[in-house]
Length: 273
Figure: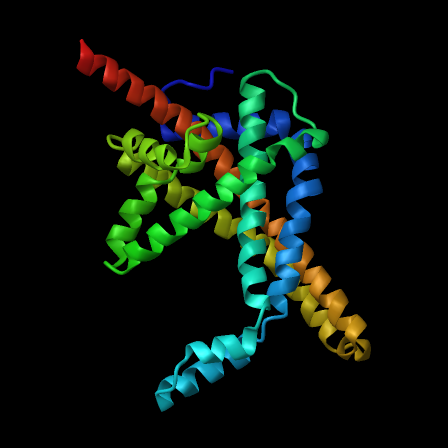
């Protein structure tokens, strides 16, 4: 398969799913061994946050005019930073495994579970990049929704630039911004398609999860610590299944990255002649 070539959206989706069909077994094995446990850990920590109490205290202090940051400090304590850290690390680990697998397959280099330890610097790098992009997108929301969509589209393939092209953190952001210059609308359209696919997958997985929750709700032992643990574990496993959508999301974006890179190189060559 040629990776760097010009594709339309249809061919990008087709080549992405062909790649997953041919390589999903090895990719899933590595993803389940390393990314899934972190996602499960993040869910367990998240489930321990008293979200309802926090919101109630936050709202009451807002109405009374007190410092609402005290509500978060009081209710969350040291758990909240752990939730954020595990959330970022789980996403970064998932992204690195997916993109590194694509990169190695492209270069005809085998990747195995024992190779993951060598990826720790990249996981830390993607964690930093993930945080930077989150901050940029958060700031863009201050200027309403359209700047957020624009910036999100322009930075859509920053992770691919960092892992596949091995660029620095800042250069990854710049490269993603540059190669989407003439393909902003197709990139935006592809992101919408991927978001819809993710929503559909989430719904298909959450429906049986909800049925299980309802069936267990009336059981007497559900009120015990063991029952709470089992329920959290089941919900967490369904959350891991939902996170499988990340594999589709990042794989499709990677093949779009190859398309954008090819188009950008041709535009640069045309401008230089």
